[in-house]
Length: 414
Image 1: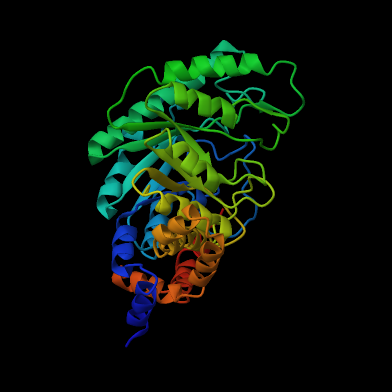
Image 2 (image 1 turned 90 degrees about the vertical axis):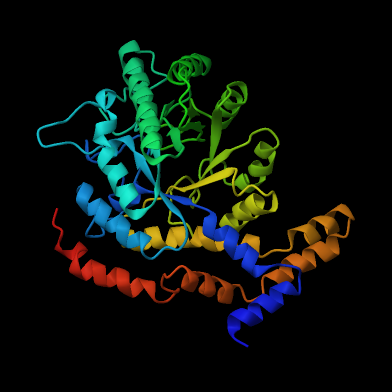
């Protein structure tokens, strides 16, 4: 008996169908963020800001559309399962001599991405880029007291939604369009309410038109560098906004809460009221530092809540990290595979038996079962999944990335 067949027997002993778990994992897309490939620089400014930092100077980052495509394709070849690419509006592709402002972008500036998505068989998600721009005034965009600033960003977000809709039409798909703004203050504010009222009014205008191919969401945050004392788009504000506006969802990012909060616990709470939950998975280290995602406890807990609540189709998983201190392609591969491992780990748990033990008050049995699962041959199942998806195993793919670094990345200068 081979190791995979033995693993299947072991899991069958606790009531888990391994083949069914692998079939579900194979169909779950992960939206992989393009901005890991170039340290969030984008193609329209080369600056980030807004409390965002990509630390490190590892050589070989992508400098343009063609290089970013090439790197992303290499990463995808080492990642099993279904994939999407998550774009920011700052990754618009211009013709030579063309440089529209962010409130002038159109679908044509992203049609090359659509062609690329068709070519490699992936979906696309989208984000307005409300940071790293001269029109971010005093760390404010949609909540700015300056009308010209506010309307610049309103128009940018409206165009981003239109672009998302056109992408969806072109790919016969729904596109998640996520609004995140850096708005806030470094010091204690004199007025916490007025900026939020302006933000509410801005959002109402942005979402005033219903678009058939767009899934709209707003992304909250506790704080950022430069806005340590007050964030306009707090979790309470956006959760209330999404609850009161049909078709707008509250995106959960597990780096955007207090260190002692469990984002996993928020998933079943929101599932009681929403038919969809957009989710960004990252790895905060004491704050929203967006380290590369690992197969760690927090990631496993997030995925357990998704699986045990039959929410694979309801929770829209995207990644959000950027590390410039290591090989960027390795970061993509490791982070995405870590989330897929966590999903598989969750799919291989006897959730119905665990729920039954909890309902009976048999907490001893529940705890013991949860611990026993940890020593089952999960690695053999993961290896079989990678083989079935024609991608390299753990311990093998890094050599391919390093070869690509020697042959391609090392030749990039500047």
